[in-house]
Image (cartoon, rainbow, N blue to C red; front, side):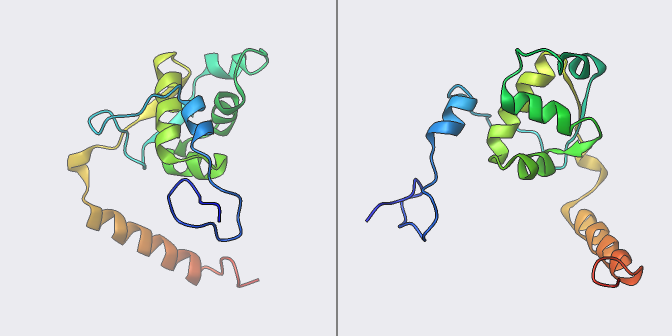
Length: 136
């Protein structure tokens, strides 16, 4: 029986490969002290958008810049690209260092996890009562 990278048996899906993320990040990982919170907002810089016409950008970096034409959270970016959050953190760090992304880290003292959860719940209630999805 073949096993996925996580160590458990496969459940009918393709095995998860650790090789591709390793190659994308060149073996680098982000330490806890460097990790951006998942709600960090990212926006592509004008310089990065101008470089989209150049063929030298790797596929994932190009996809990050294209997705960040409008502000997007780190978590949403990872979900859209189908990449692990920590892989995206490394790639975003590279692009930020090269001044291709503007990174807006939320202030830690400004809100608590409970405040964030309350805002999410209020937002979901507002969608539900305003005739959002499923009310068409």
